[in-house]
Amino acid sequence: MLGKLKFYSSLLLARAAYFGIKVFTKSGGTSFAGMAVLKFYPQFLSHCRAYIKEKSITVTGTNGKTTTSGLISYILETSHQKVIHNLKGANMLTGVANVFALNLGPFKRFDYSVIESDEAYLTKLYDYMPSDYLVVTNLFRDQLDRYGELATTAGFIKNAIDKNPDLKLVLNADDPLVATFDRTKYAVYYGFEDVQYDCDFENSSNAPAEIFNCPCGEPLQYSKRFFAQQGHYYCPKCGYRRQICDYAARAVIYNDFSKITVKHDDIDYEFRVNLVGLYNAYNALAAIALAFELGLNKCEIQKALDGFKSIFGRTEKRLINGHETLIQLIKNPTGASEVLKTVDLNSNILIAINDDYADGRDVSWLWDADFEQLRGANRLVVTSGIRAGDMAVRLKYAGIPQDKIIVEPSIEKAIQIVSETDSPDDKITILPSYTALLKINKLKLKK
Figure 1 (tube, rainbow, N blue to C red):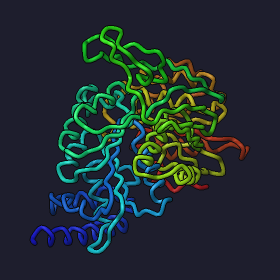
Figure 2 (cartoon, rainbow, N blue to C red):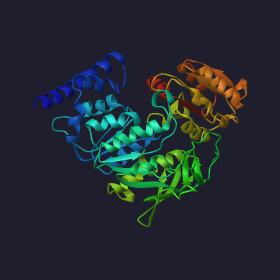
Figure 3 (cartoon, rainbow, N blue to C red):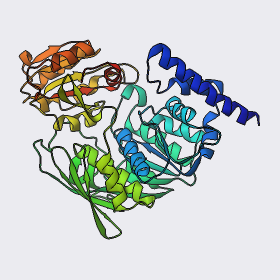
Figure 4 (tube, rainbow, N blue to C red):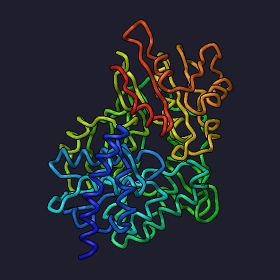
């Protein structure tokens, strides 16, 4: 009884905290109310699962969490389900508590929860909220100062899986590390059998790929490699190889969209995905696989894909000072290199890099990301943020002419520079790190 009283009191506290931060700081408040609630009642999240009538879904991985969880949530909502979802990507415990505290009510229930979770916080989340499904997108080297090497990150996720006896897994078969998570659980696999490009950007990248060993100790070999370590791998010594996919797909990547043909139960389903790049085709395939697992049909899924709009800097399109602008988050070598393939070299380019805690203090990843893709940039390349100077040095060594590089630490002023052009047809590309993206979203930018 005391727990229930504290839980309901937490809901009132959250709304008061949210109102206060909105009034006094004009902030979006993606975590503050959750922080206050967990301080007041640390067991708050343990009560939240009771307010979900159907299934609880979590999404984790290094890249693609926000887009994949956003797609899943939108597919369910388009199918007339009530969904609670941490839409803005606040994926630590405080962010998850925030979204529940501000949306739950004593008599308010949801059909599904779709929760994006930071890899390191997944095991803590499962201490309070067991899940029915876990989607794992990929594991790339990311923020070594926070996570350590990939084995450490994989260990976080494995520990979380072990805490959920009935958890069902939806795994990326093309990632050799992700594919090992099924050892004691029900799992389905998604992956690409073939990828073709019919677009202006190239498939090749100079970004380094991780080398993985088979469980027997032999380095894995590849018959196909799509990017980084993702592809069709096998062990020449013991015969271990990529899993046969329950959702086996073929993709054709165009400039502004992709076509994905998914084979499931010997039936081909063709989807159009209005997102840029192979990395987003992987995100869409993960969401499609989960949707089929939940019993949705092809028409329901495609209807949602047609209407889905990118959120919060994940291939986000918006107008700035009358110019069509594409904003794409970059935060680690593999993700940045895939984004860099898709950059319009005829646009004004702004790269904003911070090194706050949420970004990772170590920015050595800039030297592993394939910024050489920008050598053909035809217009300005502006570097900004706390590490604007470091980014400018990286571009110099990538071969970008110095007369095209402008260093402007103020992100607001940098946006003014790239948007002050005579022709309304001139486009802008913005590539921010995480906290730089937060800064951009707080600015009052003229459309």
